[in-house]
Amino acid sequence: MNWLFSLVLTVHILVAIVIIGLVLMQHGKGADMGAAFGSGASGSLFGATGSANFLSRTTGILAGIFFVTSLTLAYIGSNKPKTTGSLMQEPVQSQTVSQPASAGGESPAAPVEAGSRAKDIPK
Image (cartoon, rainbow, N blue to C red):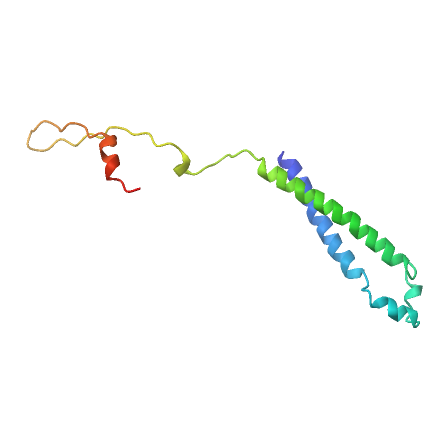
């Protein structure tokens, strides 16, 4: 599953870079007015209107691929098994605590139960 995540992430990043390049290559709406007065846009590589159609369609297709890879990455990221967790999420097991023996030779005190201290802990 890790290789699939890497593959989709690589495609996602490459598509994003290509979309940025295509958007920067496109002309704005005001660029058509300059072509009407003979600025030479009709002699471009794709023709007067060919570049707008080609770049617009390519940008739309790549935007769709970007959308699909975004959803795929979100799905893969949300369905990963949880390998590590916080220690605070694990249940606490209470154990009895024994008091150390005193030096005076007295018998050791009875073990203190963890349940009796539970009321002293603030919530």
